[in-house]
Length: 230
Image 1 (tube, helix red, strand yellow):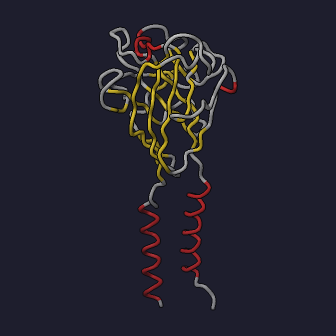
Image 2 (tube, helix red, strand yellow):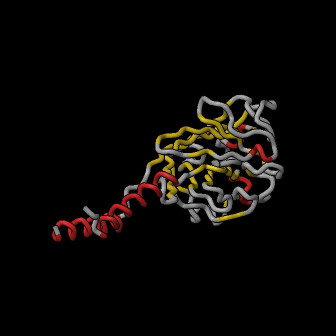
Image 3 (cartoon, one colour):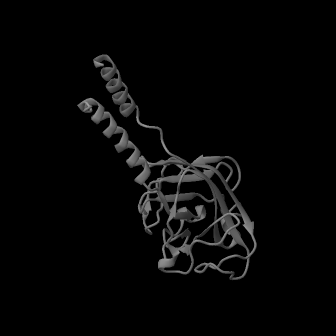
């Protein structure tokens, strides 16, 4: 028995949607951590931590909480790419010197920008804490700063959101904290260099979005027509 065109269309739509979900990949590819005191000082070359090797900003080194650093050095190895499949991820960024996280009067907090899918110019998530380096997790918006340091060494608007979506995955930052820790990294290398360091920990929840309303509506209408014709 031959399949009707409507049946073939519906089958194709379902297969296409499944293939799109299965083949798409979302990657965390960069971070930048502007030092808020520097927002009115020297920008952007001396007061930020990022994953750009070879610039004058200090390097930001990232690792899973309890794991090993995923980047190192001060060149190409400073870059990283972390594939995000559905689940929960706990990461830690370590920067040389405790001033990033000490919440002193001269440094009333730090903010964190995350970059995805090889887009280093525009953050997908920008976060802050309500009390400087303590308090509730909040999105960083242009009401806080018109511009922040991006992961290309330039300036850009903050994301204004704790949620990033590229159509294949929805990534949500659900937790963010800062503290001064022992000696873990240097300014340009991921091994100890003397003195206290700053730790920024954050949690990402990753899910696959539900099928779009338009696709569900289309499929529903198609199945209804098929039923009436049978």
